[in-house]
Amino acid sequence: MPIRTARTAWNGTLEQGAGQVELSSSGAATFDVSFPRRAADDAEGVTSPEELIAAAHSACFAMQFSADIAAAGGTPEQIEVTADVTLGPDPAGGFRIPRIALTVTGYASGLDEAGFKAAAESAKAGCPVSKALASVAEITLAVTFES
Image (cartoon, rainbow, N blue to C red):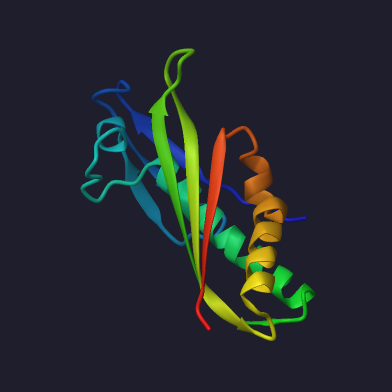
């Protein structure tokens, strides 16, 4: 099985330092990271671990969902997945991810709304990134079927 690698180079303290995350396996991109932007409402063009988790979760979910739609006898026609990852304080100290909200919109030929929603629930349980994030206290799923 493949191994994917990302590398982060960091300089300075947590509060005044900054770094860059490189998607090493693909060479697709390098992104700036900093804690002040991570903890702020406006990212100002700087990414965060939470945004990268959101990207991984939405992409993984979309792939698993398309497989689960096909397994249910449908054909995925249009799927859009958004993952909102929340960073919050940890009662034990520091920070944690208390919540991830997945939002799915789309349609699949050969499935009705109930089948579409069932495939989405199956994808939520079966997506490898969902499994890796099992310690997140709450992962919600909102599904909109467009017929």
